[in-house]
Amino acid sequence: MPFEMTSEVIAIVGLAGVAGWVLTTWMRIKHGYPLENSWGKAIYPKGSEERVKLLTQENAQLRAELGSIKDRLGNVERIVTDSGYALNHEIEGLRESKEIN
Image (cartoon, rainbow, N blue to C red; front, side, top):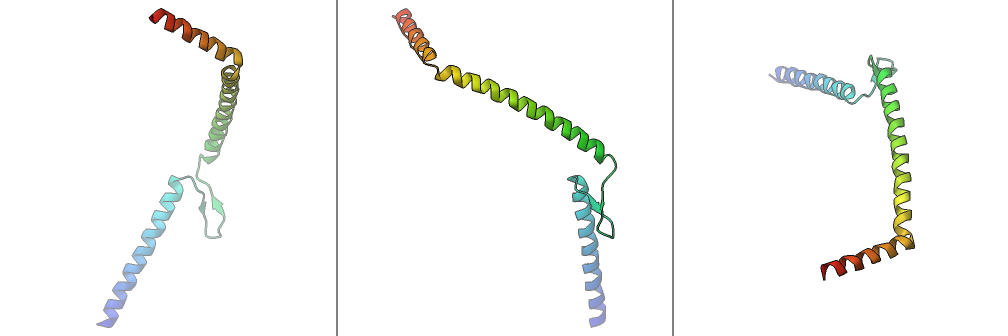
């Protein structure tokens, strides 16, 4: 009796180990991590080089766009903090209050 129960436990543990390995491999592939062969060397999926190129190009485009937005924001900040802008804003406020009365 104890021998049968031990073999069942070993089988369940073995199946759980295989299921964990399959799940881990699937998650690595899904998230783009390299797989490893039996020697621990990284094995990259096919098409990963093209994906890296596309991501590098997209990164460069986003950095250029961010730089442009920073320049525009700097100009807006300069305009808003300019004393002439505040004076014009006050004058327009007075004109609007005159038109309402």
